[in-house]
Image (cartoon, rainbow, N blue to C red):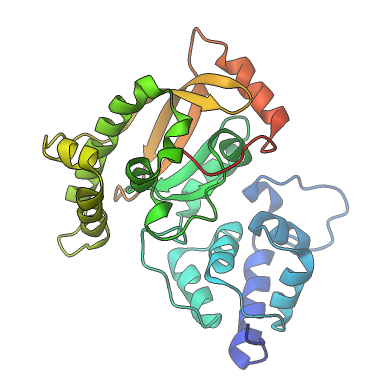
Length: 289
């Protein structure tokens, strides 16, 4: 990686410090704690929120470390609750291309991040309309797997559902047909809502039509319906079957959704989700959802 010695990288460090100073710990779900000597967040707190080492983040603020990756910039933008304009500015200061909307590095609206931060006792995550996971809370990682490393077409769970048998391990086999039909109907609704010049959804649909006979057959049915409120049966590798209600909050343009999972009434799922909090991510072996 290139060293960070230019005037632009010095400005990057100053920009990070200015954004860090304006955030209260409570804004991002952290305790205020005694003897807080600095306004806003401490460096170690930003590092924790972004999944970076403290030493690396310190180097960034000094404008002296290695060039941050696009994934790290996206993580910092979320940790610091940057607006879309501020996020784009951060990419440019780091000499990285601003990513197109829709991929894993997409900007997440600060309001959705704020809600996600406050959902500490239930699994929750923000996804795109093409089911690309943008950010997860720890319980969502424990329940559904860690999606942070997925790139390209595989970042979409719909794509994985129809191309990777491992993706289906999350649901009982008896539920696969219903899930397939619901995913296709949701994708048709999402694609229709996008701008006519959009290529992301069209490219994915074309690829799935070519590679998945199941997808092609369902697409030919022309079913259309956004997934809003579902009751799901999920298979956890240690806890077994967990029945949950999956609730959705849509962004104004429909391109992002906040999903959160609550225990289904009349089941033992509340106790299982409590156990999930204790188990954490130690039993999760790979990305699913």
